View 1 (tube, rainbow, N blue to C red):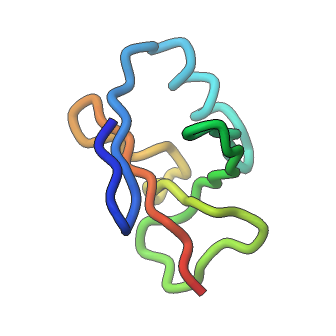
View 2: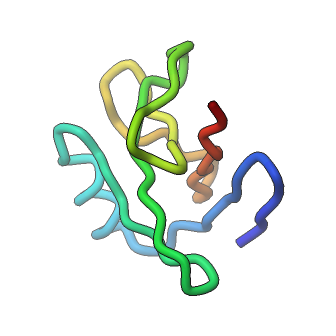
Length: 80
C-alpha cells in the first residue's frame, strides 16, 4: 500500500472480495489503517460531489462497477 496526502492505492489480489464489492448496490468498505478505522464509499468517477459520512472514496464506472487500474484500487481522501 502506498499512502500519501490525497489517498492510497491497494493491490487487489482477491477476485472473490472484488466481486463482492462489485455486487453491492452502494459499495461501502471498512478500513483499518494504523489502528484507526475509516469508511470508504464507491462513487461515480466523474461526480463533482464528495461523499458524506466517509473518510475515503473509490471510483465506480458508469455501470456502477468498481474501477480498477490493473489490479490496483485507488482510494482518495475526502476533503471538505
